Every structure is written in structure tokens, then in C-alpha cells.
Length: 298
Image (cartoon, rainbow, N blue to C red; front, side):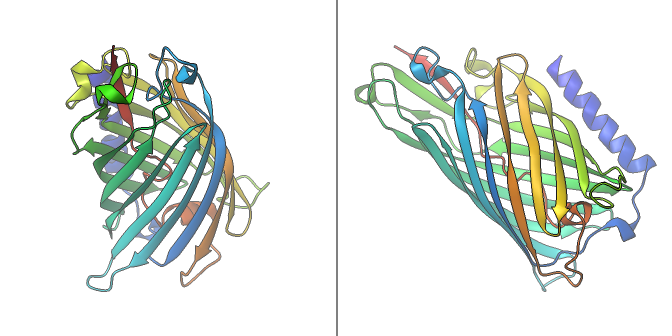
């Protein structure tokens, strides 16, 4: 069922890209840009043991710095880089991701690499650290008043195993594969100015393929499918207020929700960009740390 759902949404995205072929006038050039993000919210993630006090929802802080710079080797070529930290109760993680991006005339595409280090506070006083790496091809199509984003996060690092001496039960952590399709609408409402209100709606699939597809079982899968979305406004130039953004796993009662502010330093020829134009300066995924699935063996 999950594979049919994913195939259907990808088919709809490709059909929209063919039928509503964007004009090159809709594309924002690759110029210098820096974004600072501060978000707070809650998450329920299976990296926490289900049979301990860490099994429920936890408060979550997420900070990120994202930069984009043009590369003058080839017109339309640039580089995107981000560093982030997520703190959730006694657990925290930091990560880096980046790679080349290219303006192909109808949108932008890129190949990003993400690396993440996680610190886990176990139920028996243990504090193991583990890490993972993902390759993330991403593409955005630009339509009038709409951006369509699609990205895939493919794990390339092996599973991590806790030693028996590190806790009262053994833990296996597996980097999880993901894919997301999102449509971002910018209705022309006069309340916050033209193109400064964004409403996003999409779907995210986790663990549809890869080494953890069969073995993770109760923790994250075998497959997680759920809605993703958000709403944001730009009430003042370069200041974005993220009213809400999140993802919900309807199969396994997991979610991530957050809100906060993001500030942009634009070094474009025209620095007075709307939220719609600002979104087209970089590629998703951003503010999306890599995901681990876990198993427990006593």
C-alpha cells in the first residue's frame, strides 16, 4: 500500500511539472544568502526506548544556519551548506549537510550529503554516541504561486550496535531512508503583502526501502507514511515567522512539530525578496536532521 501511495504522489508531481511547465522567469538566481533559524516544539521519536521514561513526547529545540553561494565555474551552479543542532531533553544531535545545487531553468536540483552525530541518554545512566550519513538528491519545480519540492534521503552508513556493557539492554540503531513530496502555495492575500504567506502540504515516507525495511519492525516500520505540512508568513522584510511545521506518522504514533523564527541575509541583486522568492534561493531538505530507527534486545 505504501509503495502504491508513494508512486501515485510522485506521478502527480511529474504530471504537474509537464502540464504546467514553469517559465524561466519564475526561477530565482543562485545568489549569496544566509539564513539563521530558531525553532521550538515537541517530538516523539523511536530513538527513545519504548519501555522507559524517555518513550513519550519530548520538548525540542532546533537551531540551524544555512548558507548558499554561487560558484562562478559555470553559470547557474552554486553550493549549499547548513549546520544544525537539535536538543530534546537529555538527548541531542548535531549535523552538517551540503552539496552542489544547479539552476536548470524550471527550478533547481542538487545532491546534498548529510552527516549527524547523536547523543543518547539511556535508561540505565548510559550515554552512548552514534553517527550516520545520508545522500540526499533534491529537486524543486517552480510554478506560478507554487513550489513543488521532492527529496530523497538515502542512508549510506552501517547500523550501529550498543555494547552489552553500555546498558541494561542492547540497542541497534539503523540510519533510516526517507522521501518527501511537498507542495508550497503562496496565496496572493493582501494581509502580509504579495507572496509572503506560505501554506505547505505533502506526504513523507520512511523506511520504504533499505537495510532497516524488514528488521526495524515495531520501532519505525516496516513502513511509515504520514502527512507533512506547515504555514509561514514574512511580516517584515527578511524575517520569517514559522507558525507551524511538522510531520505525523499515523501508523506508529510518532510526530515532530515546531514553530519559531528565521532571518535571512540576502546578498542578491535585489535584496527585497518576498517569501516566495526567498524560498527559491535554496533547496529542501533543510531543518530535517537524519533519522535513526532502533531495536532493543534484552
